[in-house]
Image 1: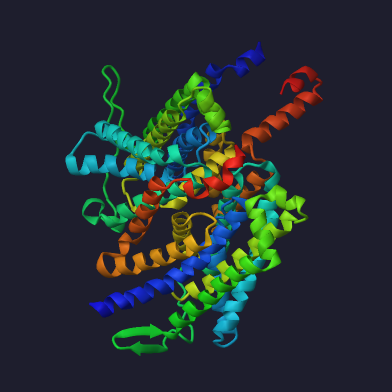
Image 2: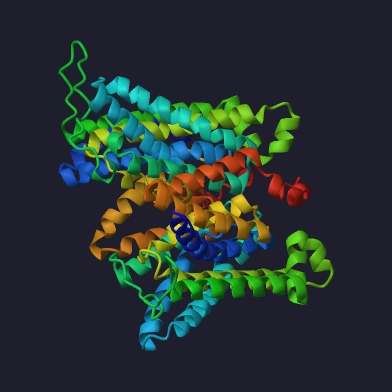
Length: 293
Length: 333
């Protein structure tokens, strides 16, 4: 029994740390722009497919696949910002960009559907079958890799935000865009930077989620829906909260699968989300947006 | 004189009724008649969403859930309890409306993006319940052999059967027209002005003594009840129900209809629903590319024509009038 709990705990942390990477991107964008990017889901999917094809191209070099997914993600993030968010910024309507990215998402999903077909791809990395055993607990090298890579990525992001000038500028833009601009910061460039970082993270997590998910052109949607829940449970724009919430959702997922029914995962996660919203509604971001009144 | 007739609502409503009457005669094959019914259901869903989105300014991504609740509740009432169609219909609409009020508890406290995600969560939960409560909904296997609405017996008239597509279209389109008229009355009444005030600036509205919470609850209830009605007709028309018909992407599709048509007007969602239902059918020749066209269209409309088809039409009309030299009418717009 204890081994089952531990085993599922590890599985939950593995998936949860990938959700954290996806959710951190959403939080980062929300922090600087107060906007939601629905196409984030499809950057995850595209990252997964890029990794799949590049890994095969480089005869099984998974790290080449991850790197390629990261680059593709960064480029897409830049594009989404340049084409959708930057032109809509002057309109000052908070719902229009969200709706536009739903359009982008429908487009990307169906382009992938035409090119790649609806049948799930079997994405096995060279590390998937490399099993380590501790007593009764099984751990694949892939899981170890995922936990290491996401810890490094989260750590780097955290250090970047905390200790570099650019990170400081990003936080300044999140707090007050106009005042930041008066201090000689170009908010537009920093918003673009936030998009590039967020989407690179999404692409990279896609590369690592690919072997875990049912890899179809619609794979990202299931991830992003959970990422939204994580971002809200953790508090929009709050990095530590997002990390904790992401791991909680990962654990909920693995324990629900083990002890209840895999079909109930989304119900449990979203019941938690709605409960969170009912108990602590705008409280988590209200302090930041008071001056909008 | 002519312009007075053209600008009167009654004239256009009569025209709409005539067009609805003529459509099944023009399209006599079952393929296009089926599409006509789908159009009518989508019009219902789109005007319902626009009421809460375009007028009350609440982005509700849970419309697929209310659509599904209406469909499943009415069907289960008919199949499991043997309830007559119209009573089951009323139940479906009522339960969907109540579910909307339940969601509006969150809308009362949340704004903008938070509401969008809460409603999305609501849609995900509803979909998963439909999928996993197998003893009730039969899950992914679906419910089959749902009967069409029963014949309508009006004394003095021949019996109207609903097992043929033309009459089923008259029923759904007639209901959609009726809903349109009611919503049109509602948005032009003080209630509509109140909702618009909440959309434009909730705090100013509240400072004028408007009870924003009460009106948001009302807007959600009406909007989701309309979607529920769409679901009831869908079940009776298609005859089978599977949860996948009410996945969250359905919410996005309905949203796209409202946006492309023009939110904040009632005629916009009608045009959007018709266009986005018929366009994919016309593009069937290019196969899977049709949904790409769909996505691109939504994006382009938001970027370049945020008022949708209606706004584009108004601009073209204004330009034509300007060219005709009627300067005074232009200056008023």
